[in-house]
Image (cartoon, rainbow, N blue to C red):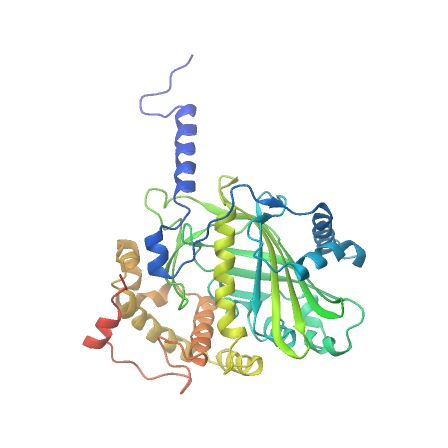
Length: 425
């Protein structure tokens, strides 16, 4: 057998190193209880042997994904009846029920109640002037519809279909999304989704079914940090890799994902709806899937928690949020630059003492307001949109977008501010 040159690793050694790295990646995926408590993350225990979905429900799901991918296909209502019956009659937490593997990954079921009627939900979710990222800011940093999407070409909004809905209404489109740092490796990714939206009647009640499938592999994962998940505070470095020592060099990807979201109105006179979600995800390194059901479910709980402040708000309406986003879109470049400069300065003051941002590579990015330099045009708009939303909800913000388009420069060198930047715990 031919020997390798001195110092050159053998194929077996390389394979061993890869296996060790993958094992390390799997082991660190779950957030520790301490980290979860300090950052407002959510932990859950799922059954090791979850119950299986009924075969007829699986066939319903298959039909919906077939319909998503076949633009000439026809919706067969009897085929999706088992799924609709299941999601509308299930009252218990379905976390220990697992759909079969799809897209190369495991799946989860989640159910939640929202104190909001379906009309209001549609006006939030399917208003082209309101980015979906603002409705679930704990899981999405940025989102939007691709040009040419059928959704953008509709002459009437979806909520106008509800009063006269008799036959199913189908609408298609393609979206792009960038997620917030995930709870297992604090990486964020950009990817496209093909989406099909169906409005229909089931047992006399209005239902919206939204089916999505990731169009292709995401771009490479980049290093982020969860600073405060409850207040939607995150850091985006722009650097490729993971926010984990020892494996920070890894190139990771979201390979495939899919979801079916069903929202059902309780009663036309009651501002309440139920949300049911099926979701699958394959992500990891070197085409290996390292995502467990636990990770997907915890992410969906973050999604639900960040939905509530907007959908259930008594002081904010879809029309007001759409108008607020219009004010952001109307900012000129110099106004955006001034606001982002102010944001970056205040971000440094607020979070410079966070243990995560004391890392040399991150401290260098945020020093002297330098965070603005790694934020491109889309990232800047997403920050201003989120700050605007937080202000409209009465949450703490780093810039004032309520009183004027460009807020006055803040005073940052004060003992009070220095006290506020100390992280809890």
